[in-house]
Length: 578
Ligand SMILES: *[C@@H]1O[C@H](CO)[C@@H](O)[C@H](O)[C@H]1NC(C)=O
Ligand SMILES: *[C@@H]1O[C@H](CO)[C@@H](O)[C@H](O)[C@H]1NC(C)=O
Ligand SMILES: *[C@@H]1O[C@H](CO)[C@@H](O)[C@H](O)[C@H]1NC(C)=O
Ligand SMILES: *[C@@H]1O[C@H](CO)[C@@H](O)[C@H](O)[C@H]1NC(C)=O
Ligand SMILES: CC(=O)N[C@H]1CO[C@H](CO)[C@@H](O)[C@@H]1O
Image 1 (cartoon, helix red, strand yellow):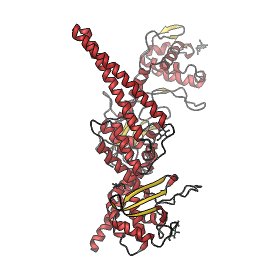
Image 2: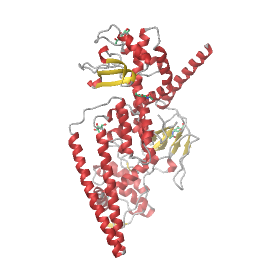
Image 3: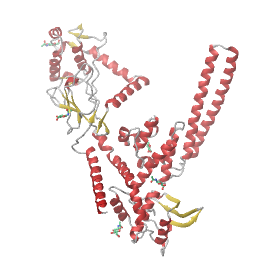
Image 4: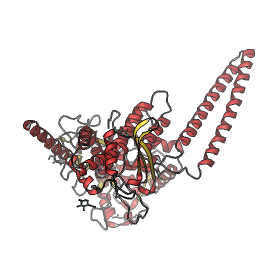
């Protein structure tokens, strides 16, 4: 027996050690990773030569520049309106570096910067900037899509089983150095960074990123004491530049992440805790019995521990520990169920908690005992207060609070409900909201129906009616087109039937969408979904569900929510299990 006990303690110690190690491994000051894999940097796009009609003049005469010289000239042309280009040092530095890029012939011709005329080039770039502002929606979308593709491919790395956001995976394009104030090096050419300049840092057993075709990396290293992935030496000041992990992505989501990790730890030991409090219902000590019944309520009913009043809150609100005799009624039998407890009290934010729950016989008997010889305004758990209960929770599991039970139950319930309610044929969003609602009901996140409810419902209904009429019309048209096609039997009428068919289908789909919306809204009338969504549901469950069913994340999280849950969106895989 002693041996078993000892083994148990050792296992517990290892578990704790492990847990704290996991956390420091991921969010420490000086990270040491075991595994690091990334795709390398994104290089600046190659130089695109100017169109033939854009001219450069030297000493009043048109001159065609070589590609390399032209590229550097465009850097200057783009800055022509800027004060920099009038500064002596800037001009001197630029001219010196530019000449290095010229062919021998260009070098011998172009000897005086004041004789260079970049105005035509400059006008061309201004026109381009203008054109970019006037771009059509589609063109803008195309650019956005491409940026997103790059972010998806290069914007993340894997560090020890976690997908992490990379801060600056794009290498700055070449240009002219500006510097602050009157920097003596201003105007110098900031070279184009090539793969041959790049040092890659990643773990030996990772997929080492391939250099662009025809190129080589300067070096590939494996140093787990640093958190940068890529480095190179910049040519102006000789300083080393790094591509690193996005520090915010690791710190921002950390608290949220830890909260759900705590809830996942509870999942592992909840059975033990439940067995323990069941035992305690029989304890000789009144204090222990009360504690065990309170814990049962917290676990089973997701009650708050209590005494968590907001500053200045005067309403008579209670939680589990501060329940009074008047807040519960005991029914040995009610509506065909045995041992029913009827709760009726004001919880946090003065939301009424009303519930009739059948409980286990032992709990029922204990409650009878606690209520003996008490007045309605006496405390139900007279030997208990919030700090005692919280201390006990800490002893059961590090970081355990009443809220963790809620988070655990809400998250696990969401996961189960999503599994149960979603199938190939169901409307996915409706299923999601139903699952979310099941959780909100569990957590007692009720609300009064919004004032605008009736009106918005009526609006929706009139939309549905209009859509139905439209559908009837479309069906009639299809019918007559079919009849027509039977008589005429030509291509044109056949085509007409096809397009009418499509129209009917489209309207049917639209109608279904509206009807789903109406059902959803009706079911949502008295439930506040956002509280549980924002505070109790591990976002990785939702993200994984979206990935599994191919639902865009925008459908379930709005912009602010996406920012809050960025860590989960980055990290959750399709097969995430809470
Ligand atoms: C450079 O050209 C400018 C303008 O044509 C002229 O004023 C200046 O004297 C020239 N400088 C040299 C060193 O030739
Ligand atoms: C969550 O809470 C409900 C309501 O009390 C309970 O029936 C259910 O068993 C709980 N689920 C888990 C997994 O704890
Ligand atoms: C809770 O009860 C303990 C023991 O009776 C007592 O020491 C403590 O001050 C109480 N805490 C509060 C907040 O009432
Ligand atoms: C997102 O939803 C929340 C409710 O969960 C709301 O408070 C917020 O204003 C919404 N944000 C946007 C950008 O729609
Ligand atoms: C990007 C990069 O090379 N980072 C580090 C990789 O490992 C070497 C070896 O110590 C470090 O010096 C680099 O800074």
